[in-house]
Image 1 (tube, rainbow, N blue to C red):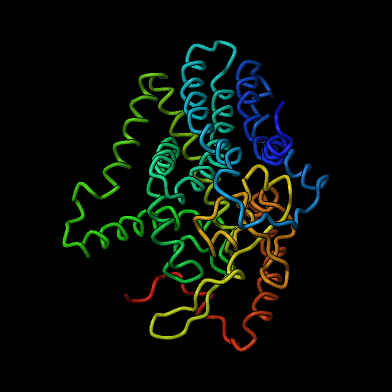
Image 2: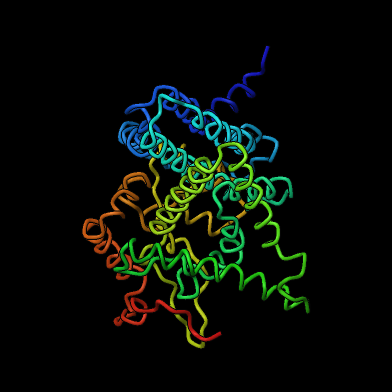
Length: 377
């Protein structure tokens, strides 16, 4: 008989396994064709939003003294996702190649759903894995990111974003009044440049050139090249197009989340290019239960920046007096971000309230609003 304590561990972790149901749904939509090809985006964005409304907020916090062994069932879902996503992505490229019941438009929409899956879930799981100490988990993160052609995200996130969040030196921090459609092209180029520069500078401090074999960009390029060749081999030229298409959608999904997470929030400038330490109030939070199941507590973002290697089930919730709160979970907020006038109507008053609450002594925010380029280093 299974001990009650073990059953409780599985039951507590089980809601975070809901994301796995999106994989059979994706295969079902591929087999059915027609309007079914829209099922994964609709489920990811709107079903989980409806579940948020039904399940409410989760304000409870896990015990920080929980041992690594007790987190097995939470960790397992992130580890299993990697081979499942790989088999699904390349399996579908093979399947649709000769699927006569799927027209060209249906295949494009189907792989739009694949990109929603690889971006919303896959990159998010990669984000969790890249922060962990075991090399095996960091390698799995590299594989997930290579499947969406965004491998440099690991370097940018660990070496740039976490150090410079809320400052002009972080290209991923969305500025006040900056619409997503301006943010997106800026961050695509800015994050790639800042990631490469960060790795180059680390090598320079060891008196090594940027092209030294230890530069992880060689690994990034090799993995991405292998994924492209595999997509071409499995799906032909059409499969290569669909692979690149889903990668573009995944990147768009990631950067939508990045846009939401820190919009308009800045660290106080202390002079001489220095900024205050990162604090909980430098990230937007959302305690909505169901979307945190889907995103493995990514919405508890303040605690993630406070303790980046803390595993997702242990991330702590912050109250409204400690960190700013989003009115809805990420699925709704990222949809709103695509409509800049709506986004500004919802979020700009909240940013102004945040400024009054945490920085009443700052009366001129123009330098913060206009700081789109990093200061001299």
